[in-house]
Length: 83
Length: 225
Image (cartoon, rainbow over all chains, first blue to last red):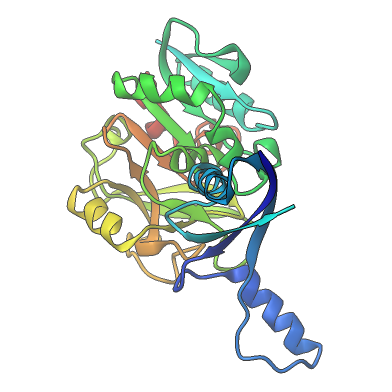
């Protein structure tokens, strides 16, 4: 078994309104920053032991499917690195 | 009929639901989630408020609570199930009903009376109304914006599973009457069975005559009577 960190990034699907990101963007603009868009995402770092990177990725993928993301509104991706 | 009002960690509208059902003469009791559903459960309320800090997403934790497996089995057996507010979020997160409820377009928590148009009157939840009736019930949520993918939306409309839409006092479904940016002004939907429904507004807060100006929500809870 090898120790991995699976990083799961969950973000709203393109086209789904993100009021928190809009509010954050407005706050940045009030501070004088110039930006054309802002998107937010949730990142989960999952430490786990697995036989190989594929297995670690599969397990993290299932975590995203079953809890970390809501497939109605979210896309997600998984990146695995040895820890 | 004994109605189980499921109490999750942090639920806070469970007592209100029991009180409103008592008022309607319905035998209802709070059921702690870890105790499971009583054997004589003939109706289920997933109450409003919050649950588990609404961590991750509103309703996400409660939706994975083991009692939801029992709720799902009961729903499939025809037991009437209604999710109100946080209960609606739990219902959609658990797959009992289609779509998702997410952050209001205003990005604010909103607590205000709204008008709803009854889109289906041939369900247990709306037998007290006629199709097109306008009822007034309060909302109290930060994550009530109904979202649904394009295909699922087509199914929702095609299967006529929208139960309530936000509207103005005369029943017009307009953007101005949409408090939270919900897709198609959807405020409540049916599950695969008409005996399963969720809605963001709080019928239990519009049932007791001494609470406020509307008792329009009583008709929804009368499904259990």
